[in-house]
Length: 414
Image (cartoon, rainbow, N blue to C red; front, side, top):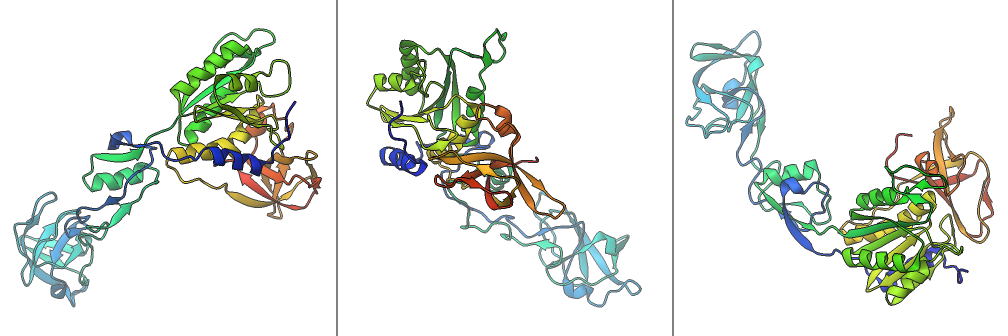
């Protein structure tokens, strides 16, 4: 039987009192390896970007004052003094009543202070007709307008994606310091489980949790180490847990934490190191059997075997720990307001989380509809949900038409 159940808040407090999650270390990698990693350094521009004044159009570099008064039916004629190519320094100077051909991205030649677009010109031998006036700095990107030398352009804890890597490449960076990715061992228990890909024999089901939890680990910034399915045998399970603790920074298991004769996970955890189990049951639904242990200063989260329960508890407890170990700031849930489509009951004496699907009425009200067949053992409960409604422990139900807050489960197109 479970000891006195802890509230969710008490469980978080117990975990955080014993384990202070923080980045595990810093390593230096190449830019091409950095996608999805977390930056561990301030990045300061060592040069101006762009490093020179450059043209943003194809046309002619001119002195703006020489174009004043030019109109479509009264053009001004300028002498073409040369051509400025991209990728090389200009060898010419634009003087009074002169223009220089220039292409997009090419450096601005000396003497010029504006670019007139080629569409507003007509070239004749060594002269060009200007059919419109341009103000000073027209069609010019000034040096340092994108990034100025000495400016901090990226800060620690930023997730490196295509845009951030583009910034680093623009500065000439080839290597970058990032936080070490925490390794998370993932294993399942249960005599009924069989790994996907094998023939499904009578009485067996495919192991869902090891795969869904492994992806949840990746989404949180960790690296999953998949260890497979372990039988409900104390010696074998203890051996598997020892291996998991030895090869990872944190361990996540599923199954074997209820009160049945085969639910031996707490006993196995207590047998491999001190202090062992620190949480045995949480007053939530789904997720009541959740067990947490500390072994050799490492956290072991033993989640319920039911897929919805396992992923919900991962979202509530495990994900935030991995995020901080990965150097990511904890991301609060995105919350939207909705109206309960039907009466939603809670579990007596427990904080209840109900998976819901969001629907928009013709009246434009957003309705939160409990997912059909919302059993904690049904993976489609999560697959069909946009988020969850949290019902406080001492609230009997949420009535139809009552306003609720829906905590979104990631991005969704449902």
